[in-house]
Length: 75
Image (cartoon, rainbow, N blue to C red):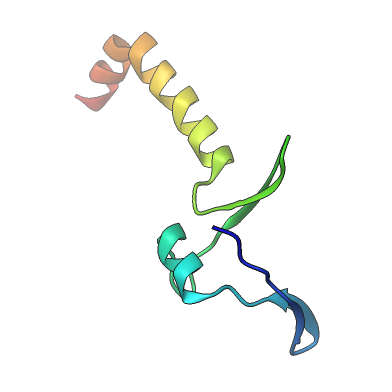
């Protein structure tokens, strides 16, 4: 899929209008956040927050390693 997007003025800002088809593929709607991630192929737009995912991986690792201590704290 290749879409040509035009940069336009939106109020006092500059932006890009995303077609309905792209919004559906991203599974986002008005008011949602998307993330621009720099990759080796350029900039990728995604609804996936890589920083949050990294934080969750760390949290899951801590929960696995300290399962007994967390269980005691929950009592």
